[in-house]
Length: 327
Image (cartoon, rainbow, N blue to C red; front, side, top):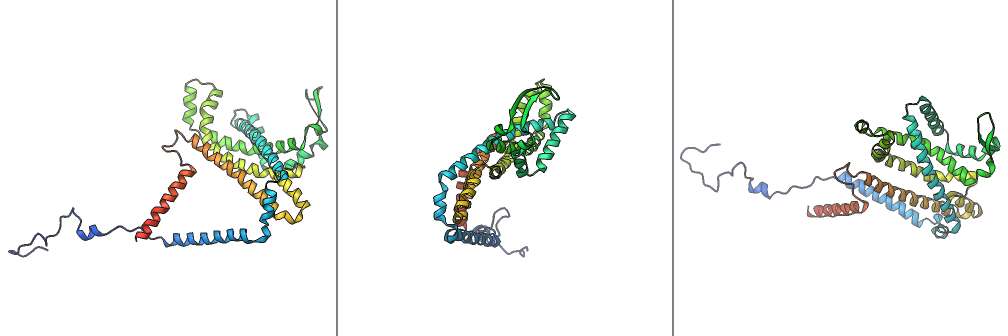
């Protein structure tokens, strides 16, 4: 609104320029947006977690004294060692078999593609316990195995019952099952590599084997690693089924002790649960650092380590508390 003619406006009463904020606006502070739903959900989760922990500690049915007694008993540790051996052998053999099956699926040979697809289809469709029991009773079908000319003389003959010990049956059964799933993981990782990498390697005249070992497979590992580690965690838990082929692994040792001491069934199951949690946690930590290693050169910044995440979380929590206290 313009002033009437002849009326002077003092500098104190004059409005500030458009590009300079008024003192009233400059004194105001920007407040963070209130999120009551987040705080309510956090409080509910903390209450439920506290009740769960209180139930674990205060419920006498868990018998934590017996849990401490059984946790490091030699019987349990021997079963744990067998579990680690079976899981390690099966993981290595399953991954190698999966790589071969994946290459066969990607081969130009229709025979290799058909055989690989049929193997993967059959093993993924059959429960693992059925595979283990079938191998355990394999000597009833074939008492002797031989290597030689088909429909001709045999060069080598050996007794299957002596060769197929409980450990061998468990490792072979888990490896055969694991290879079927690992094949799809590896095949998906190979297909995730950009086609331009294949074309560039072929343009340089590099041999196919060298292309796969030095160019394709290292890049595919970035996709293969997280998926296969999930399979590896499942493999560690699947070792509990070898108890049904007379191999006393961690679960089998706990089952045997539970039959001898029926009052300690719950503590023994807790022992097995905690040991499996430890094993899968170790595998998850290894997975993180392997993924971080192969992320070099593919991302601008490497993902933070768990310690760095903890420090950042504590810093954010401290800043959030300070902001709420200042409101």
